[in-house]
Amino acid sequence: MTHIARRMFELLEPICLVTFFADECNEELAALGHRTYWDGYFASRAAPLGRVPAQVVHAAFYNFAEGEAARHIPSAWEKIAPEASVAARQRGSAASLRRILGAEVAGSPGLVRVADLTTKAATSAPTEGRMMYAGMRTLPIPGDPVERLWHAATMLREHRGDGHIAALLGERIGGTEAHVLSALDLGIHPPESFGRIHHLPEPRLAAVMAGLRERGLVDADGRFTDAGRDTKRRIEARTDELAEAPYEALSAGELDELVAGLEPITAILVAAGSR
Image (tube, rainbow, N blue to C red; front, side):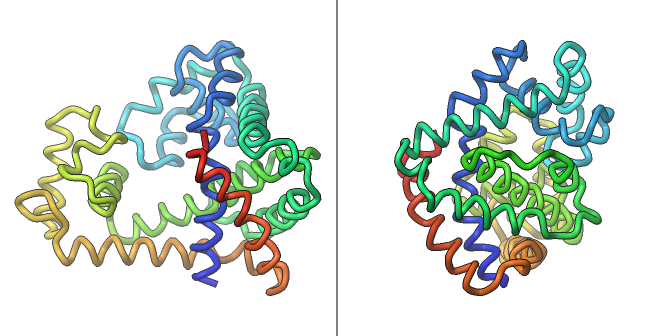
């Protein structure tokens, strides 16, 4: 099942990434009145949690720097209801998928079957300890197959993300530290140049790197030590283990059918860069 959890992540992530990479979602959110990409991001992704304070969004998202959520929450909801933002995210993401996949694939019986199986998995896992996943589970399941596929894939992404946070906490790795380890795992050096953290104040980044050096996870040049590489491997392995539960609801035959059905869909999205 650990292998299946990793394979499903590889197959489903390009479906989810249209939300962040393609134009349609951002255009839908901008049309509502969100001033910036990040206003729309925070407003729509956090919407399933309800009108919670910025501190709760910061805790649930985990990997944003202190104060970043507060720049957008609750101000992004003051004139635009959370429900409108999350609906716009779904519409825009589905529109991206239809454009990239083309009418023949988007309207095929195979996609309907994949959407149904992905939804079966996505609605079958326990919600305890899974804040973002639990929030997504409160939303209605879309009737349109393309929207349903995106919605189910995004539920599974949030489920995996909640487990990833648990794995990070177990290794005492904070949000910014997690980005450093991911950057190094991707071969990015210096890791402070990684797009998710390069904008942070230099003293903040220096303190994070100093803490990782003190723990023996990076060396003097800011590269992985053996201990740091082993820590990253443990985090990823534990994340896969914690992502298994949804797929236990599917039979072996259904899992094989789902993988086979997703592979050509994912190949199209990967070729397009989910844009």
